[in-house]
Image 1 (cartoon, rainbow, N blue to C red):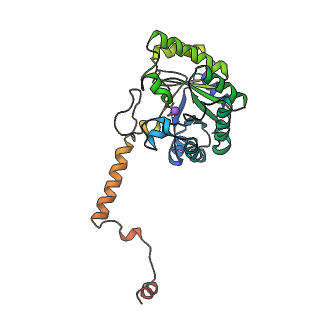
Image 2 (cartoon, rainbow, N blue to C red; image 1 turned 180 degrees about the vertical axis):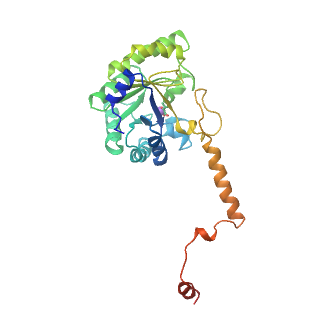
Length: 277
Ligand code: KIV
Ligand code: NA
């Protein structure tokens, strides 16, 4: 299949062909996404939690995201590759934001970068990065990098003020030059107001139906431990399979069952004799 481009994503929106996006953080998850035929792959800063073990996204650094992004790039051929710009890498100035975005393109091969928020300073960053020629994916609604300021990881757009702000920000990020918008954790009825108002593709996560959907791959495969957000659907139980597999290996090593003769190398009698001598 041909490489997915921004033009292809726009065509899909126009044709009402749902856009499928999933996160990836390393070569095997990138290969999984690619082989499953998804349209967009996101190296999310959710990797801070799902692969680095932090309890929020704010801890992950640009250098760490670049390592994850490079690994994903090597596994993705046709899907459109988006890399998250982590917290702290765009807040200082437009110049800082452009310099960070350039690193993701040059060092990791990103097709686009994603940044959270739709306030005035964020719009200025989106404009600056887009003007530098780097496609921008905007992200409004629940923005985990600033969750503390939002009062926690909670749905947005549930009050009159919050819903009005969401619609205002969605329109503003498009005007600022964003090529795609992610809307996270917003009532479907509120997100439904935004959808027809935008020309750019809108990818939902916990926001009802949109032009496309995104989920964290560890969540949908059932690798994530414990509770996940209400908007997650599990399509597999890979985490349990991983534990079962390693436990079976441990049991065979302890029981002297593994390795068997078939897992080794044959030698000539002369070689064995020489080794003994
Ligand atoms: O980091 C991430 O995984 C994300 C998606 C949930 C949109 O930003
Ligand atoms: Na993210």
